[in-house]
Length: 120
Image 1: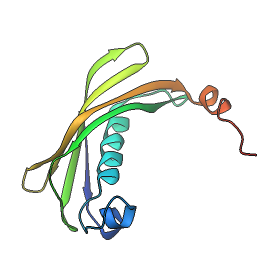
Image 2 (image 1 turned 90 degrees about the vertical axis):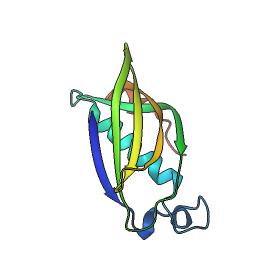
Image 3 (image 1 turned 135 degrees about the horizontal axis):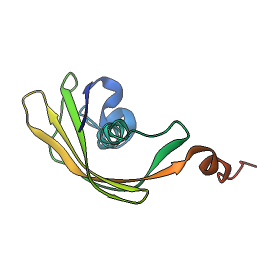
Image 4 (image 1 turned 180 degrees about the vertical axis):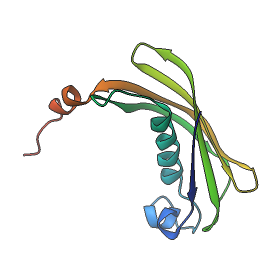
């Protein structure tokens, strides 16, 4: 299990990231923090990376600026290159503020980047 701790700052709020107008942790930021935990849980060769392919997350409660949020990711299934994680986020009081599942696929870093279309 990987665990990462963040403190909610003004730049993490729904208002700051454009996902609402309240000064509470924005759902896109919570999702990014949960995905960060999934990446930390993987032990990949330097030539590999992983890409997110499916996310199902519930943002269950608000977190004020100054709150400490601990995100966790645990591998629940591996099927070839696909890895499925259960993810959760708790505040400093231990209250569950988010949970769900994230799927990632392990890819060869150079091969993946070679398929990214150039901007014209």
